[in-house]
Image (tube, rainbow, N blue to C red; front, side, top):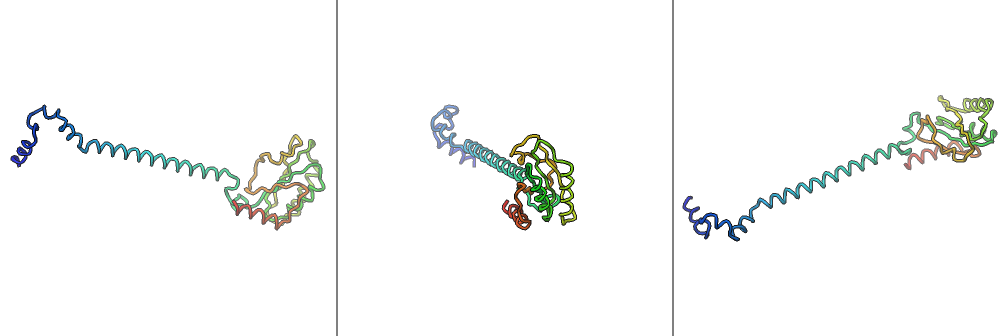
Length: 201
């Protein structure tokens, strides 16, 4: 074994001559072909691939989190049946038409699964006690369910058509049906529209 090594060493000119051979161009070229730089290149590529993969994973995770958050914040996130009481809130916009208001409140109070009725009041003067008491009696008498719809006025200080779009506190339903006091939708049609909207979203 030793003879073979010595013969191989002797066969290469300048290998046994000490430091002079290390400075030769052939020797430098030979040392430059070692796999060590290739290992470093592969390691660097592997690190860059891992960095890209981790960035892609973080991006996908962030996108999924934003999607889930937006669906949870969206009013169409859950179906109507997932609301706390499984019903609907009817939001009635009215202005100086008490006779129409009485008719529309009585009608929607008779519809099944109506959980609450809110009247958007935009007159300067608040509704009279007699009107409020009469509407409460209508809600109690017309409702056919065990749970009576929760009736309340939403008072506004100014007369503005945009009052119907103001945020309303204490809403417990995901489905809100906004309607004017001169529009009466038949209960089966009203119920079908709510279900259709829930299925579409």
